[in-house]
Image 1 (tube, helix red, strand yellow):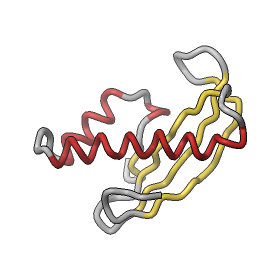
Image 2: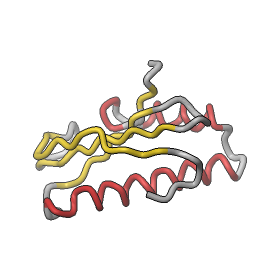
Image 3: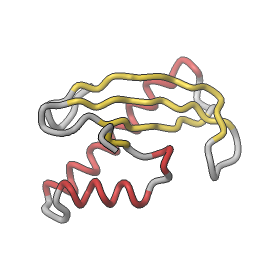
Image 4: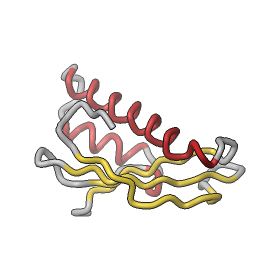
Length: 105
């Protein structure tokens, strides 16, 4: 997967047909781990609606992850927020099980 920084992205696990808090219907939860020398490794959980074909779960999850990473790169590159402010914002607006989690927490 192409990233906008030097990072390794791996899939930790895929949990199919899960209940997503605050939503109706079933979702697949794809957990990614992002690692780099530039930041503390962290997980990003991506929810994919079960209406997507099972064969496309990973492709859809990677697409959602890519967009999320682009958004944060744009926020930091435009100097709207500093990197630590972006992380604090992300942590404050996403439900606990839907956001990135730093392993140090």
